[in-house]
Image 1 (cartoon, each protein chain N blue to C red):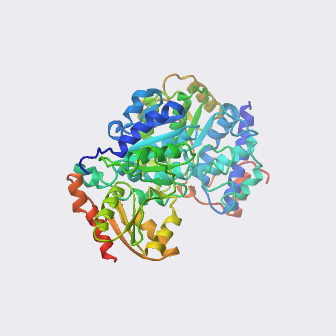
Image 2: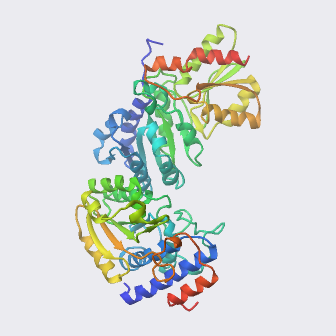
Image 3: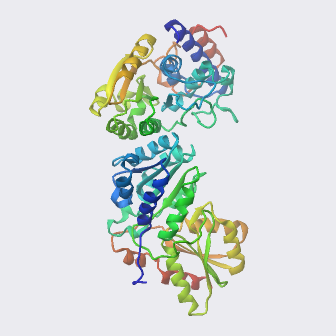
Length: 273
Length: 311
């Protein structure tokens, strides 16, 4: 278990290496990677039962990054958790790399499901939780989605399924950063209030500051105590979190920083590289 | 063949599930509100704890199927072919084929013999859609016995597969103890004047056509190409070189289905004349299956005419 201070320090390194990877690739998705980082770091370091030395351990908890374009944040989190050397981040998106543009379960250790086509990971995760219920396994499935991603119809098909099967072994976290490629989610196709929607679909819901480690850990603990239904944690985040010129800018959804921008970003994040 | 007992391949699928499920506890069966039509209701009654009802959500069913398969199960997921292959296509591609999920998509109601439900429910594109997906096996059985045989083999092999099954009863082509192998075509009748390569319900029509041709001194080789992928290329090349002419017959669009697949092989390895019997780039309509087969040119007589067109 890490302290909140340690988690924040790890998150800083995770953000820096995610950006270094995107910079080296000259392509990728910095905005959503920076918004989801604290969610992933808190889960992988303090909540999930995983073993980087044995990524396929029988009773491990599983996480599906349904917003697969935030792969740099997932890879960087896995690397800092010990699945592989963080320096491998520099191979991101390059030919032959294990770190594909969107997560590939057969290439990268620790990746539970290949994702990228929005909405599918959410439904895949429901299937995983269904299987664990059938098999009498007590492990958990976590699924992380974006807020723009909630515009996909399959999310709501799967949300109905999860409620129907009473999947209290499934916890969904919505990285609600308010932006998508074409602009503000509220303008493109409004999804809030997300809590009300999931509640109406039969889920327990919680709202949390997605950059407050203490609040996140508290929410996970409460979510894991819920019985008989799935839980959706709506985490309010800032797209591009930690880098002033990327924060809350839709234009940084899928654009790589240049040399100078990377340097500024690393300094702002408190790095020394 | 009016006196022959006809069994639909979907019926055989339902029987297979109940039999196979007895010894294979890791088999999970999924339905999208069509358990009666897909014939998965027998399994549901026998093993309710391993039956998952997804409701009218084919996309969710197939994405969940991938998650369940990647948790150590073999999943049989069923809907109408129109929706399993068509509506959920991108999910089948990304969640199932790309991840190599152990999901057997068993799609019923393929083709024009859906009958009265009409154009929105009659798919002629599913085999083409599934065939272009890497690692996806595509199997179109001719009758009940071969359905069970091919499923028994394929369900024991890890990885995705698409079975295309029919709504209407079809006459038996094989005996219960016939030997069939996924990926190996079957020569049902010898002949060297022309080769008729068929799949699904068109196999019995091909045998009927061969009999009609025989009365006119034309000896047709009849091949059941039940596996469209991986395709038995060797058998096709042999047919092309020994018979010199090929007629393909399928209850599917001639674009991209069995006809297209055979033509791809012959064009590259042994060019020969080909005529294709199937749906010719048009949508279907409501009607009795037999009447529709006649109207859209998928009968034994149409195969005979196709043979004569390239003589």
